[in-house]
Length: 269
Image (cartoon, rainbow, N blue to C red; front, side, top):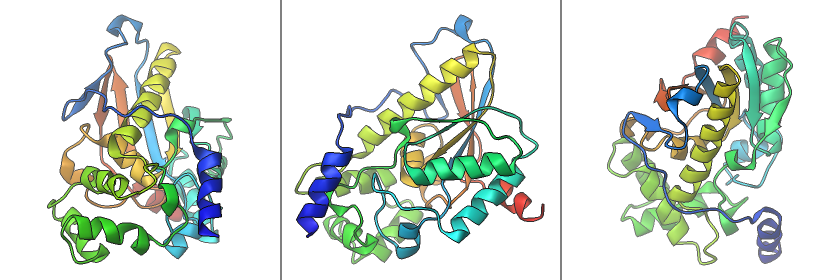
């Protein structure tokens, strides 16, 4: 049964992805293909993780597989939207996963800004290969063992202390996959960066503005590799948390990572 499930996932989700990291600096990312003269406006991205889902609640691996938002997931998306209601958005994007699209639409409606949501495959979560749908302990235990840690708990503690990096965890997860289909850190980083840059250039050329992007926890953190100090990437992003990224003159500047202030604000409205 598990083999049938895996083959089905692979046939549904497989598409070719490049594997090299984009060139980035520690604090900013320069977009070589864009000349400063082509920038017409500053762009501010509000990059958020989707609301809580069924698989999140069950602690199961949810990459390119998808489950709907739970009642708590809908509620936090509504709170996010209310917290963002004073920020006028010019455009909105999400991955093509239902949970991301649903979060974006709920948040925009709650903000009083029912904009159309443009879907982009490159904003997907990491693909976990044959581990899609498995319990997270089963997925991460082989990684912990390979890296010399007792169990998943010890592995996450090492990450929080800066003893290992998320990139190392992702690459090791790909290494221990016998099917060689799990995405590594470079693959996720490159496609997420490509999506961010393309959207930034497009919106800037149109005059700039605020853009909502709803994506996924690990994918967002992989995208941020090299854009923000490593210590900002040691804790999992909470559902509906926001990372603000500014694009100006061909460069990206990252603000607070995984900020829950908008959700907190929305709770009181």
